[in-house]
Image (cartoon, rainbow, N blue to C red):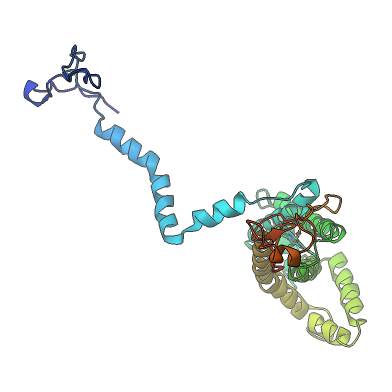
Length: 317
Ligand code: HEM
């Protein structure tokens, strides 16, 4: 940016030198003069500098504009700075790790879908094309393939954590049920994805999987018929598995993860079982009601009416 010489400021526009204000109670006569360098032009910003400043502020301004309309910052602050119970440890990261594995699967899946052809005659060769010719294709395919096992392992570990910490109990039963559905959907993703390369291994493994489903009580035979999409495993099965893997289940998983996270934030997480809940100050909620209740109306981290305290880590139940 070329810098131009600063123009001389005419005397008329420069204000008379400021005098030091008088000390309070000293009669009001100002003593001494302010340094008379005020004629020196204060550093003026060039048009380029102003534009640069505006550009620096633009992201903040844009975020402010969006926030004024969404009022999201209050919610985000409440969510990110919510209290967590004492004793929270590394086991509590398993849910977020599962979420991360899902995001990796969704991202790598989008790139694979750009090159994959869901046809019985071309599926295998499109996967070979991804592995051998597409730049980073083998890497992305490998991430997706191994990532599916990682997600299945993590989801089981996370479920184990919530089970052994008693997090399925009141008031989190609904979140447990949502979790069970998420587990079934994750297994469905792994199962339907396995057929997509349409090689010998995936073909025969899917036949075994479909037959196992067929042995289920009552709905088993209907389920295996639905999955096979015809008398034999073939092109129609591949299309059906592709639609389930690409459209139906990911949409359901995203919606349910949203509900799962909402409940985690709303109800808070459960303290580990070895962390003792604080003793109530009075013997029982009823006694507390008789005594007029304490200042926050809570016993043992819960409101006396039994409702959980919003977003607060409130000890195991
Ligand atoms: C896509 C699958 C899943 C994702 C992304 C996910 C994510 C999370 C996250 C981030 C949390 C909060 C942090 C934590 O406690 O780890 C959480 C909590 C919880 N999850 Fe999951 N979860 C999934 C599957 C499951 C499954 C399969 C179950 C059980 C069947 C389950 C039951 C719960 C429960 C009960 C809580 C509350 C924990 C507490 O209060 O301490 N989740 N989940």
